[in-house]
View 1 (cartoon, rainbow, N blue to C red):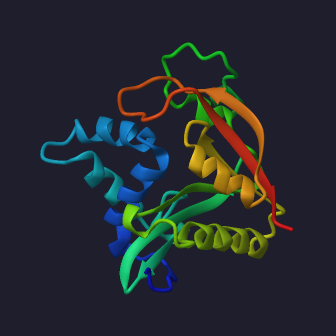
View 2: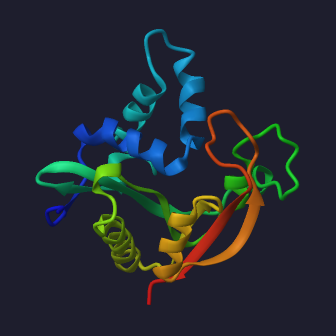
View 3: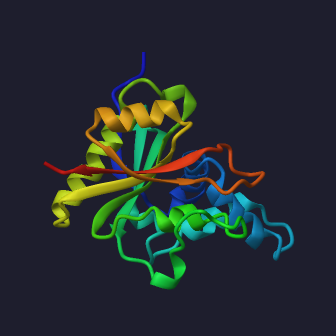
Length: 199
């Protein structure tokens, strides 16, 4: 039996845990960029790079945009969400992709002017107890508080459990793009853009 979860805003000391959870939620996509940075610095791992980024005070990828779920005062899950702003047109390339930019599908699958759930993940031993749903509810509350009428997220089509959860929470698939294969990305097939109304 899992104790009732508690939710709190993240703090700077959560940086490494946030990076670990972003690795889980991105299914390897985040690691690609972190690995490239780690190769430039001796003695640093990809997760070290990610932890440093999420310990920052500013930007979308800051602990200040994260929430932590705890069970018995131990970290159990994480949410990262922030406003989705329109990318520069030059950065958005529609499919088919030429395979040179593994991030192309995620740049394409954006829903500007939505509250974007960049990452949500729960530790394996804490799954199945409503923690993910609780974190998604926090994202919805944040969207309302910041004046957004819609939320958006990107999920791999092959991650059927996550897709089912999001559909149950009112998210609908509005676009899809083929994944650009990479050894660190754990899924193939399509990535899906899903959007939900806050009402």
